[in-house]
Length: 236
Image 1: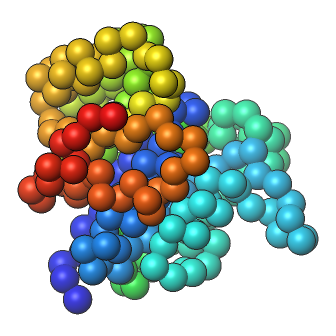
Image 2 (image 1 turned 60 degrees about the vertical axis):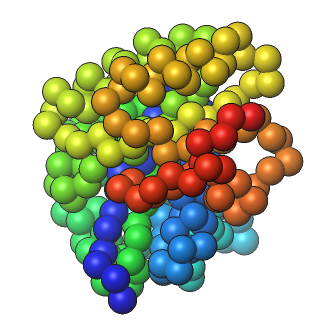
């Protein structure tokens, strides 16, 4: 088994494709022969299906992984209300604790070679009374992969998020451009600008392809600190 590596996957906002990008990274790692899993420490907006409460994001990460590690490890805190996690936790009288997240992370780390830990909402979205994405990334000593939703305003959102990451002494190891709409004005110019300003390599560009799956697009992304193929550099 190769040396274990893990990353924290965050985004410039909510609903910008973090889970899709994380699943694509998982499939990219699997394609390179690694045992890879995803983790969603805190999720809100869960549903009860067949008597089990499950988050859609967690379900998608579970499906992308090399094997089923158990939802209690993959998603330690699964909250029902479709609101910011800290509000959902208040509603259910649940205290979000980093120790529980750490235990689940350590258990997953013993069973895989590559682990992608996905946040909730944007980078600074509060997850509990004293817990947010930066604290989890610090606690687990994880470098950051930033998913940028390519839409109007993305430059400002991306630069502000990167500034927040650097201000907290975290490492931004790469970013993914997720093309959300087919008619985004000056899409390639926005990507080129961010390539020069974010201070981290572009790991890949995900095209606006509603019928595509993370597995089918895995060849378009590279893991941090690995050569980016011609395909990964291509633009839609």
